[in-house]
Image 1 (tube, one colour):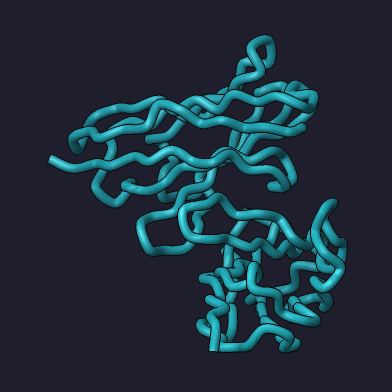
Image 2 (image 1 turned 90 degrees about the horizontal axis):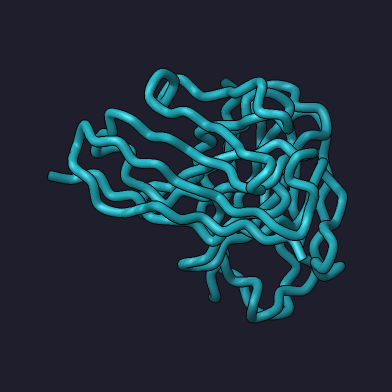
Length: 106
Length: 114
């Protein structure tokens, strides 16, 4: 199985900050990497699919990049509603998720 | 609007079976894969089953293979997850998600405890 490692596990930031979340795959997953946002008690919501494609309805402050084994999610200017947990997910082979980055208010 | 609504969760004893349903609307269910994902309390996400559009092929990780069976009824726009011989470690919120994992249901809780 492909292991997905996210860093950091917790990120403290302030409204207006630019933040970058990282996700590393244990082997090449090509472009098949999604990013999800999950708030407490809610289902995960797709933000970015296939590395850098913004899901419909997601604000443009979210962006994704990377290739192969190293991927990033960037939020250009944090808004209050962005404080949540973020998961990466690979679907190049048997699907696996990262363990998440909790984005908390500094 | 794409919607997925899970049902059928609850509290069961170890070794018991349970069947979850996933009612779909707002898209062509028969043309899409269906996936099930679970999340244990306070933990990360784990894929547990996938089925292809016509239901002829199914896929599972080793953690549930031989105990869980995924199916779909395209005439009813509904997917199912039959869970057998449940264990305490199967306790989790279970989500169904459309083929590309783009839309997810709100989830249903399954608790396995004596």
